[in-house]
Length: 385
Image (cartoon, rainbow, N blue to C red; front, side, top):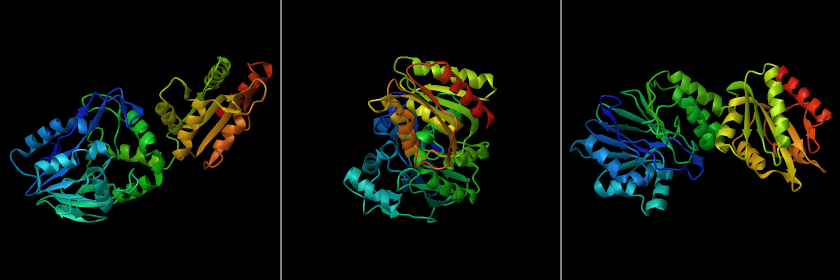
């Protein structure tokens, strides 16, 4: 597949994978992207997962059409992109490898060598001419590994963005970009908002017409939309107004209170209400929702003097990804010594710019007249803001 007259896609689709990075459910598979620039000199950008060596090498040879690569540009050393470096070098022993200094350190860790006779170390602003195509390398440390570089082709105005602007899902499946890109971003890159902001500032100085990520589709139209979402996500701002209720419930009484709150919010005209049962939903989807919307209600039970394990896991996912700039409310249930609200508050104490509601809900075993009134008061406060 040609992206431009000289740039060809040679990636693969993975429909065999069950969990990406050992934790993310990917019902529509995964794409591992790789590219070739055909010019006076030939450059290959990144490889693919180890399970697709044969397919990738076949795609590469078809794209080369008898030519030999001159450069192998390694932007990111995560194994789903770097696994075939040794296989590639076995096939093309004289190729020069272009990567950051830290990438070569990792190369030695993964493969036992950093290819000292072939290596070209590049850093911020370094350039490489392929003939007509002039490449500039831009460092992108901690987006989302420390060795990452991205590559800008000023001739075709293409940004090869490494894991930036990636998404879950194979390329032979039609689906909305934002949903799975959002889940991908907050799951994998979300902790690194400041480095992403730095990269976006660098990208703003470039004339970019096409974005070629290492996962997901090549982006050619309406780039302002994608850049705008990345700016919102990486600055930890809500994308939409709405209330997410994330809950756990042991015997169903907390769930009843949550559903009562959801009904009250809808009755009062809240624009969007999302309810996630943390014991049963995809945790990454719940995390995505928490970052997408402006308000979050955490509802759980006291459990062993602490909180229910799924809620603890959820809050840990939020705090390690820099959850901030939101309104948060608590609902707790406890039959003899309610502690959940206190524990949740303590877990969020270091989070920045969180506004906690004046109203909360305290259930002693099951909803009664008093706690039902608290539900209504919380709904009114959340809808009034």
